[in-house]
Image 1 (tube, chains in turn orange, brown):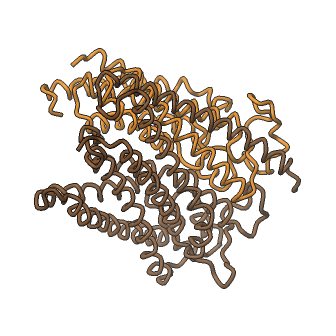
Image 2 (cartoon, chains in turn blue, brown; image 1 turned 180 degrees about the vertical axis):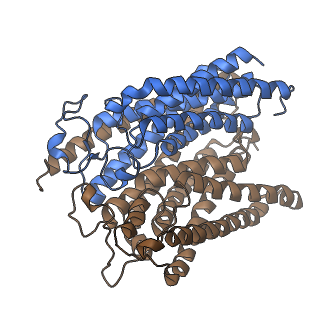
Image 3 (cartoon, rainbow over the protein chains, first blue to last red; image 1 turned 120 degrees about the vertical axis):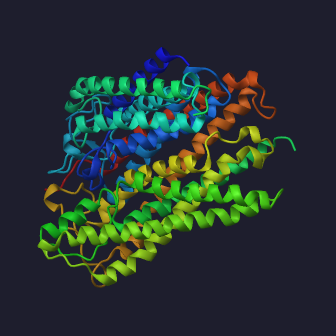
Length: 231
Length: 325
């Protein structure tokens, strides 16, 4: 049991979870009607889906490696694969199912590919689909969020001596409030790093720091109470 | 019996196929019940005077409701397995054949209860907008919803069962997943819901709910709430919607989850093979196996990004700028 390491990795994991949720292109309910750019669901829902996929792979990796970096990277790649497939298939569905072209509603020119956006946008909408800059931001969000989730899982598993199941539920329980903080900060929809709402990130990071610190202390207390690794 | 690597890969493909079916049915279930994001339009319709015969069950976000069904089914199946497996030593699969459907049936029953209370509660709250509770709509949709939910939960529980017994089924119990059956059900319940919500709902929300609006454009804010209430023959209900979405939205959603499961498991197994971890599970090869799996994952991610880039460019060139008014 290493209290400092537990608190450190839980705080880092929580901050990364919050950062990842800000980077994901969340379209919410309007995106389901093609009225907003991004993935057509809520911040917490898509972040959880990605992090859970990463956690599944990270848990497998943790059974045959002791390296923190490798386990965290396994989780990060798992979450990135999930989010990448979702964004690509969403684009296919928008295009062939609804005849909608992927376009950003927040910028007139794609900051990465320099493709024009405004001429392709339907009037009275806030963009639709997952254009390239949004896709890249989503990839980064999945990677960062998955890394954070797997980091917390590793800390709870190896430093707090939780069993695999308890470590998974514990890391999930710390992950969710951090994603919810991001959802509050985003207030509905966000396209990614190029969205003006992304500038609100520092507020969420401060809140995440406090919440994750509290969670880390609780994990240390829980592991003290169950000395012997039976939890 | 030693570990048979081919069996590992075969089970992985079975899991991917089950995942495809699970997410297809999950999307159709949410479309029949009008759960998740497009439900905002069904909710709004009555408020702007569009009385409709849509089923309105927004129990919660799809990931959470599916996690609840799958974790319930997984827990009951797991408890039954603990009791039944000692009765059939050497033939544990017989216990699974009984335990999994019973667990899933209980989850489907819970789904019916939630669907009924959610629909009645939401529609009753719209009394001031003169939206009636049509009893034939209520009775007629409960069984299709429960049947689709049964299929989803059944496939997810089967995936969880295979994964937590993957090593045993392939010849070496050391390769079983460390998570218990209910936890795996919970994880895949969250993921299947997240994908069903984020991918499949687009076909229902952006196309089927607004089918009398122009095709080929995002649905404008002024259309919101003015959903299509009449079908090819008579008044539309959600049963018509399931048939429509089963032709494209459902299978695409299923393919999304199937591909994710396939990529995740495939890269892990190929990593183990390349790193020398299989078939003897040598502890010294652990790090190299994970490293290979990460490299394979990176290749998959980059490939997907390139495919998306090419696809977006192609679509924009093919369709051109917006020409409507």
